[in-house]
Length: 157
Image 1: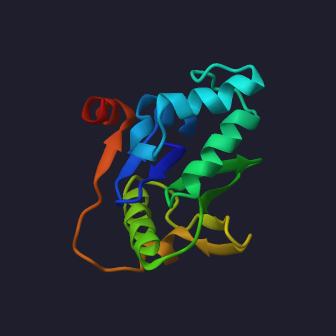
Image 2: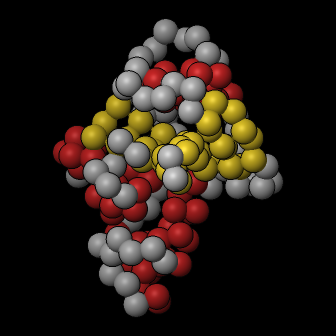
């Protein structure tokens, strides 16, 4: 599992492979519609099923992050790894959801001391921390709701 979404309600979504494919599978969950995706992708000559890197994909993902969804991916370079989180702004709700995600990932035999870089879109701030520090935050009792992309499709279509 190298990519996740944390939805506004705190639900953790595990895309099959790419963030954009989860969005295409259940656009309404991300505040999108098939029409809005079509209107974004067509000017760039791409269909909405496209999974290529490009401006339409980046525009769509940025729009979704601005709605307070959190995009998470694991970056690995030459043996070094870190988690990259993109969010619009760190709020109490986002912090609590990120803590739940951190605890979930730490329990998956992951490197629980992995570096984490949080990118805030609204001001460009980058926060450097680690998975263990994030997992030690919010101590509410609620377990995270974790959905696979297949479960996401079944529930929201």
